[in-house]
Length: 301
Length: 266
Ligand SMILES: Nc1ncnc2c1ncn2[C@@H]1O[C@H](COP(=O)(O)OP(=O)(O)O)[C@@H](O)[C@H]1O
Ligand SMILES: [Mg+2]
Image 1 (cartoon, helix red, strand yellow):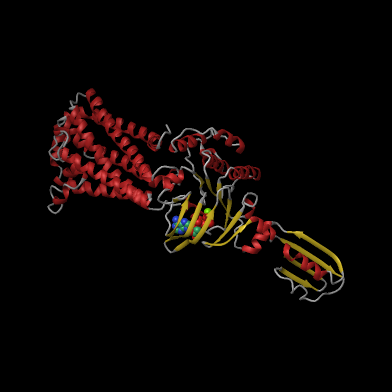
Image 2 (image 1 turned 30 degrees about the vertical axis):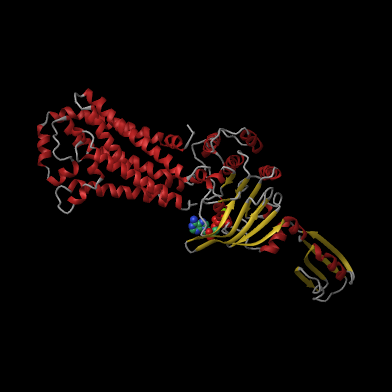
């Protein structure tokens, strides 16, 4: 079977603002693709193009082998979507939403709904206007998951959810992928996707700047190295070692961040001098990610 | 009640419809209650006759006789209040159909369901038609039933004819609201433009008989199709029905094509 999502030269401009520029991307069955970028990078724009809500300026995107704009109806029958700015009908309850959208799909309330609500600890009998942001988000997840779609398109789906529920949602995403389904999951922080994504794409100012397997990112994961020498060492002592970051040598103390692949070379340089103290700790994946793909540009909000 | 977009939309309109319905029944009751004192006051007819002609043309169907029930209703209710109510209702429904849901952002739920944009617009249109026709029918029913209490003999068939023309009048402006809402997504434009259009075409129709340069435009006014042939006395004018119906169909086609071609705003 081919790709679930194929974008080719996909570009979207809103007047003078180019929100997405020349995106080429494939998402495979059974894959969870983490789509990362700071606010305003163009994630929502990409997902809305995939859902046929907006039309590409140039290029194209196909979903399940069909054109996202032209064939929106058959595609939507097989895709679940959680919009970024989620709004429900104030007066309708969770069950009303379920029944309405199930009817629009030509069916009745799927048996899976109550099981999903229980897993998410969600009361579907309450009207949407009485629900917290987190609970609305859960209703949206139930709506997207209830028909067991082949593709899930989730726009920052865990924003507003407490960490425990985030875990549950991540579990649902993993189950979905384990069953052969594909997931496109956007977020502005790696932490929200790193447990579930097999690959990540990094979007910045409308351009896809990197696509990387999460395992490869882990292999590049940085280690903080701190050494206290018995005597002052030359400032350029680590110059021969490649791929180091944030090297500071201050008299007899040394600090740096090193990927796993450089650790051996660092140790060999260090051990040539008398060492008083030595510490080496692996950094959070998030920190590694930011070191490679732009600290300061990721909005922490 | 949540089987499809039409029933869901009618359910949303339910409260508004109930409010409008009560207003109409009370309004008719008020006019009917005033009727006996009007009838016995020949001065009232004189008053209308003495009004400046422009004024009379604007607010009354010309030639109506205030001393008959039919003439009284034509002048008092059907020339002004009833069109306002029905047009307001239809324009509100037409604007809410797509532009309203879009500005409240619930449209994303519908457009990302496996429902074509065409079907979405047509189901919303059907809800607008049912609501507008229902409201007109309620007005007609109120006239006939409440009129009995005041000895107003109103020919049922002609009241039905007038209500058919009234519903079509509302749907023409509702159709404009729908088309603009579908093409632009703007609730403001989709209510404002039909409102301005209604005022302008009302004036064109009212003054067309007197102002020579307006006269050629008069028969293009939806109000001309609505009442120029005096439906309470002469019944249905099929040419007028066809003109209004074709106008509504064209507007719905414009709405579908407009919505099928554009981005949904976020
Ligand atoms: N409908 C629109 N009209 C004009 N500009 C838009 C529209 N939608 C998005 N943009 C702009 O496109 C850029 C990308 O936005 P978006 O895709 O929402 O980013 P993200 O989801 O990554 O935060 C932003 O600069 C935003 O202001
Ligand atoms: Mg976004």
